[in-house]
Image (cartoon, rainbow, N blue to C red; front, side):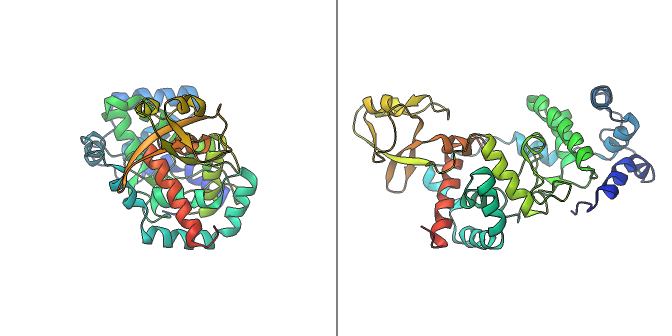
Length: 337
């Protein structure tokens, strides 16, 4: 998938999309051509955002309902993996080696992102590595199909995906790209960093200043966008991510955080038998206290504000820890520690 390179051409493609679609034979049983839900949605987009109804109807005539998407999102959750099962998925020799290559190839851009946003290169590279193996697997579904299927045929989360569909149509107009050309995951996550459309519009940046944002094919924009995302979600430059804790009390499990939000301070945890070897951690520091089941037994950790910022990308303690430890492995592999 290639984004159009010049603004005028992109504008012409979007403006001419309805006419173009009119020349393309439409399947007689188009999935959303006669949908009442789509009709209501089109009316809303026309009223609230100034879209042309004929253009949107022509677009949805080409959108396809995908049963594989519904199967994927409805599939019963697989067995919850322990940390010792989850970690090896992401901390692999190949992912580290590819990450080192990606870092070296884009060292100048990564350094500029750190200077502008305060997010270190290894964290940005790690996110892209965990999400898409550095662009090797960005998703094969058309975003319009994924979001239409989930907005109109998946009631449990229809409001969320309907909003993402609104965001997607607006970003396509803003970036002047053909909405039928953009691909992503079965849930509509897009590009090297797997941004949902709402995140794209809120946090993605034109980091190479060429007049448009391309997180699908342009690593420069992807790098800047990840850094922008973390900065706006509370990343603190130069601050730690986690600190391993020592525990010595029968009350230790009472200190474990329910969920992810840092609701207890280090001082409160100390009363329950938690301690950290880091002398710089203040007693009033809010932390996320969690336990991981490692090969050697349970490990106890204290997540700092930067750890919480990583969980804004994916609301999972194990995800954030995988990102952090991959970033550490990248630093070590480059001999920078």
